[in-house]
Length: 413
Image (cartoon, helix red, strand yellow):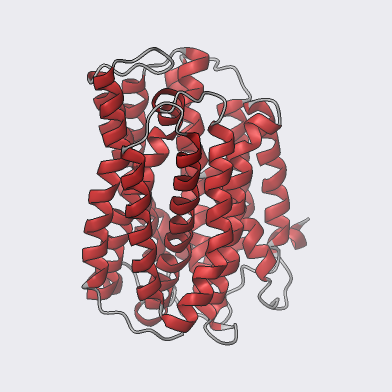
């Protein structure tokens, strides 16, 4: 067993399918939680939207300290990274079972918070280690290694999101989702055995070189602003389909369409980036996203075909975000902080903070505007929902485009 935990003594060659499967695991524990968990606790336990939004925001405030600290921890445990990965995977799987498959033994809101602390903490540590390891792995690959690895990793991640988005429907509820997640956890950890070696990297350099580098700082800012539209749409997606489109029961089909479009587009964006440049293709993806979100503002009850097209377009745009932006940051880390753990500690923080900010801002605002989940809402409440779902992401994407356009990026491997 110790041999399995530690991985092989000899340094294993980069195994890209393993990165795809591990990426799928992390993705299944990330964005789907913001889609499923709030509505599950509203429907099953009657927890208010405002309370859930406050808890999600409070948990992200923990990340203000935790994610950078976990970046340092990942660097300190570098020699024992394989063992620490197994421990974190086990914690995340157990907490996911507790969140969805266990009747809360205490007040549901507190149980929700406790399980999410464990899920988020393990998720953060695993994400930091995974992307930091990718910096060294990409260097061992021929050609444009960062983009090649990103295609495998992010395509796997998007397929993982697809599976997680529909799993509660396909598996008969959230208990089945949690159990399948635990099984995936074991398979993903096994797929990465032998992949956590140092690969001749250099020790971590701390946060200083990352924060002092103007390009790295700008990319972190782009990541934070660019994640916000996805955070907004993810937080409001189920409510938009159920109440604005008046299409309860279609949520799973639209989610699957969205994420399958992203998964199909991710390798295409990667190939185009190798030919035309990652920055140029990322900007194109952002503009496609604006067109999709703008179209959503105009939709009303019964506009299912139109929303399906919007799901395809916005999903394809997210494929660019998930593939190209992390690859650009990883490439920069290879230059300014090759250990990369601390850099991706900061990356993890800015990427997740926007999800919590969306929850704490949007859910109480919807409630204050007279919106009630699962109820008949008046025209004003539905208009507010449409504006929050469509117009706010457009404004945020425009800001992200402006930031990225002014970021000097060398287009090379």
